[in-house]
Each structure stands twice: as C-alpha cells, then as structure tokens.
Image (cartoon, rainbow, N blue to C red; front, side):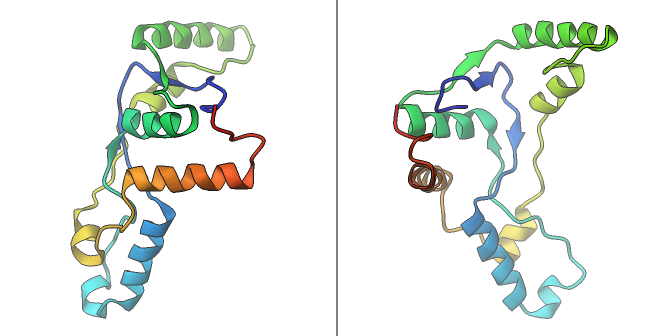
Length: 148
C-alpha cells in the first residue's frame, strides 16, 4: 500500500514495539545459551527499542517511493470514525470506527530494558532493517515492489 501511495500516516504518532527478525532470533539464541540462573522464571520481550510509528512508516515509504508517507490529520480520522459508527448502526460495513481508530492511535510499547541487559540489543538498526526488508520485497516480488 505504501508503494502504491495509498497508505497514509495518521495525524497521531503512537510509539510501537517492533522487532526485526535477525534481532529477535539473536535474542532468542542468547536466551538459549544463557546461564539458567540469568533466564529461568523470567519474562523477556524480544525485539527492538520502541519507536514512533511515523519514523517506522516514513522509513518504509521513503525506501519504497523516495518520499515520506502522506499524512491524514487526526480530526479527519475522527470524523471518518464517527461515520463508521453510523454505518455500523444501519448495518453496513465500515473500514474505520472508533475502536479501530483507538487501536491505530494508542501507544503499544513493551518493556525492553531487561531483555537488552540480559540478552543484548539487536545488531541490525531500524534503518538497516527497513533497507534489508525492502530489498527482500523487491527481489521476492519485483512486479509489486519496484522503486516508484
């Protein structure tokens, strides 16, 4: 959707937790090799440092299209969500309602400090992860992910 210019950044900027697969696997491997006392009976969230979704989305958009993602103002989204509520009440489908808007605009970050202290941070930066993912997409699906 980003490559086609039909996915937009929203007028809110929630912070989200993502995890590049190389970094996640590295942390899982570190857990499997760690001393039992360091990992037993502990919960670890694997992944990368939480990041503003706009930075993540703009990174992918720039890599695919050469420009940042388009932005839709928050007030427009609120209005569309209210329209979606009306559509639900009369029995029709709605791609956006207040619940979806809430989920799109709410921070979702997990505590990573213990993971980083015990298992380490990933070796792949967010920018490098985006670059590698886009290169993979362009190779795997060349007709769909050509540089625009």
